[in-house]
Length: 405
Image (cartoon, rainbow, N blue to C red; front, side, top):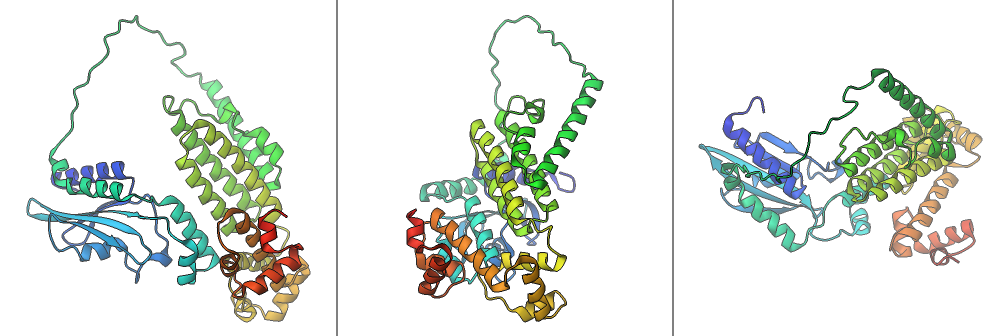
């Protein structure tokens, strides 16, 4: 820990232990309000930051007593703990969080803060990552934080006991790598990777699954973490997610759609606790990315229409101002509307309505929201009007669609 004195190094080492125990973001400030250590496992979106000031600084500024545990709750119901102490005449503050004390009401929050569709999606992804702690567990974390100064002084050095089992020396064969074979394997991996990405870029899920699937040992990387199969498979799944994300972007799939899929699977991968679950995630990732390429590739459109579609995807639940949108694209509204309809065979309004109805179908099948809540979420202030539009587009009412009729 270059640049830190011995005491600060001990404090940082202890903060790392706290982070390992709680799995929460961990921050250490000195008495000058400067960060000396931080580890952010979760990044808070900009729209959730209060008055451009991080929650941790708000908590820091309100902590007046040394040796006292503080609890802080922001407007979004994000919780933090803070603890201040003195060491060698220097003052330090440790803050951990955020966490929830109950599962948040996403519909209410989105409505109260009038979030855009993109912000609502980002909020949902964030909520999926943040721990919901029981009162008992939160209290335990607070108690651990209060023991911070004691943990600084206690260096744990366990006495190691080794089982006394006699065994003859084992001679390992092939300790020296055959460089020629290794080079061929690497070459084959890169060729397969290239072919795989090309298949995904075409939306060819069958070929993609054949090239890289849960049973393809070519990409198992068994030499890495040989005694940690779960960690090894998580790393492989993370790499696969990156390849898929890049392939989808190469096919001009809207960035916002790629981001949502990527974040969803990144969270699933990290939370998986079984090898079989990770195998299933890998195969589902390949299929979903290929499907989104087939359905949403923008490569057939001109640059202007691509940008319009990406804009509507991000703000489909807001009213579109053609004049403002045209100004963003350095054109005029009539030219924008004409070119968009010429390429997509739909008006801007019809395209937006299609996106809204598709999102409504998804929410009706996957979320426990009322029809009124779904109507508001996708941009309709009048639930009755939404129901009429939905029936006109699908032939059935929202309730009938939810019930599978």
